Image (cartoon, rainbow, N blue to C red; front, side, top):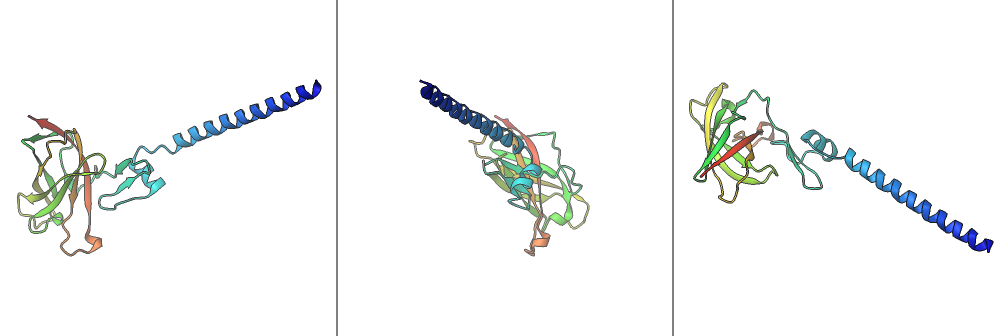
Length: 182
């Protein structure tokens, strides 16, 4: 009879020990996940590196996309508080940027969704003499697909680089608000 109690006692201890190990492992995993939760570009870049340099972007293994915004860059002026209207499938964005970004009075501008996917691309055109280092007004028109109905996007301004030299490449990324007009 005592052998049965000894064996039951050992079984109970093994089960309790296994349960304790399982609980400790689960709590460790949960704390590890909360420590590694990425919620900004800097955290993503620190943990996973930068995917693209112009503009700086990062992608987590889970598919979360982050971009380093150029919010305090003196080379560009765009009203980030404005809701830019999409009217009849067209989005007109205007602002100012230094003359060095133009070549033959234009440069490429892209519109991404918040996941970094291309929505549209356009040619930003200077509205004044562009051969200066001053801020030059520009406008760009994007064709927006009717299926795209988001209220936020990423405006990417790509410096024109006719030389093709990597040291002259640059891009700025800016978050913009969008209003759909019907």
